[in-house]
Image 1 (cartoon, helix red, strand yellow):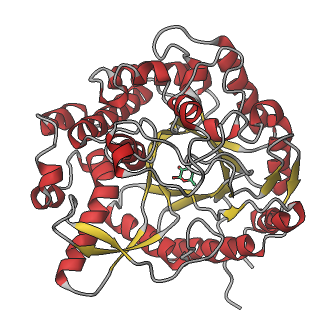
Image 2: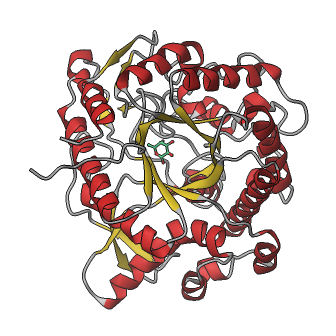
Image 3: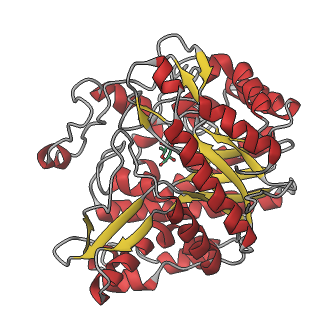
Length: 466
Ligand code: FCB
């Protein structure tokens, strides 16, 4: 039998983000994030699946589709010790978490909230006591609302705000945290938030979005530079997402659409960080991008460029695209090849291989981590059925076999994080979807391992995917 083994020093574990897991959104000095604010403003006005109209989108602010508030997450703030003990029992050697900026600096800039620092110190110390390597994101969705009121990412001061926040984090946790990511999914945060109007802050203005995205690139460089200057001896990178993108038909135009989609969603957010430039094909080919680029972008990149150590890749979906010049991006989504009823994303494990292999060839200098990959099953209000999750076991088996193959092919793949550790809150779906390997009662916080967690545990302990 072919052995799908993983290297002994391979990092394997689970992930979650602060706002999706912690709950306690207004406790111990934490201020509101954009996620808390917009969910509160709009929760309940739309039922899941009821997509807001173009009119509503155009009004500037639109709505999350969820009926729920991110006020509980999976109760990680209260139960972090038990969660981390469960991770230890699972046999995982790493956990990816994020820090909530509004918990650490509630006013966005300036005064530090000691209670926020204390909480993350307790979490980090507990992880280390359980031999679990923390992988920490500085930013994963939850901008302090007070900074959004000043334009958020689009404010020219954003890079300085972020650097000051990063400094507080490096100073307080950098002695123990050795794997840092600046941002999670820059493309989704920036485009869904500032151009497509589908995620908070629900804006729709491409010029503003590209300015926001550029500021995020500069903020990343500043944090990397600062981190290097502090000599803390760890590694720093970014987490971006990439779908497997196929042409609707094998013809020249559709292949062009694939390149546009790929550059727009991935290279636009990665190439500047690795080579100090934006993808030229996209800028030249698509006026919607080219004409809206910020002034002097190349001079800024030349000034601030600082290489990073690794790239995190979030992989969930396969998409098909076709060339269509009537669309702003000259490409449109085509009917998917197949779908998986009851699941948010159609699993396509071969796409993980394709995506990571492609990236490893295009960006050979970087170590790679698969920072998210996960299976969302619908909440059916049946604990027994939800804990018996063969679809998730199959998902894990097939994707982790791809991981083993990638490593055998020589890809510098250093880690894998399943999204997510426990059933939590999702931006558009609230508690409607369950991604977790631990089942959570969203009312009481009661936890229970799903069968997939037992299966994952065997993989973590044996470094072998059976
Ligand atoms: C990714 C996010 C993560 C989670 C999953 C389902 O885009 O990084 O926070 O919501 O999708």
